[in-house]
Figure (tube, rainbow, N blue to C red):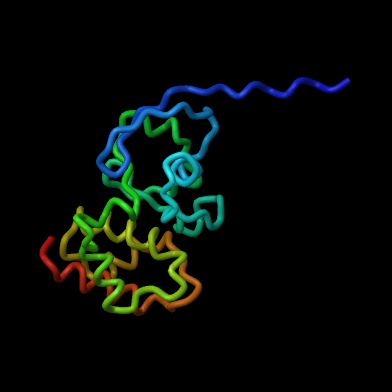
Length: 163
């Protein structure tokens, strides 16, 4: 005899995503990365390791960089979530996106959204970070292509631009 499958409970989740309030019915166990990609349609958030170790899924929650692959969506109730898609305004890249483009801070681009979101969190807290502070802020974000030199240059260039 088979045991019945556990029932998945759903709840209404209210949160702000990239400046817009949303309400969606979500399962209690839905991860934020899956909510953003599958429900909201924001595919800039990447799922790399599913364990909070690579940083590809980094988003800002109330301004703080957080790995969305280990964060339950329901834990974001009434909070502000920002993704890479929310940084550009009026069809223009923000200073970090522009710096990554100009300074060649991307290769394959898979890690770039999470890398930029981690750097954005840093620059909001500290507009003029040292190289050591940038390295620390990005230490949870892995890149398999660049060797990090161009990424560091990109963040430093963005820090030199007034917001």
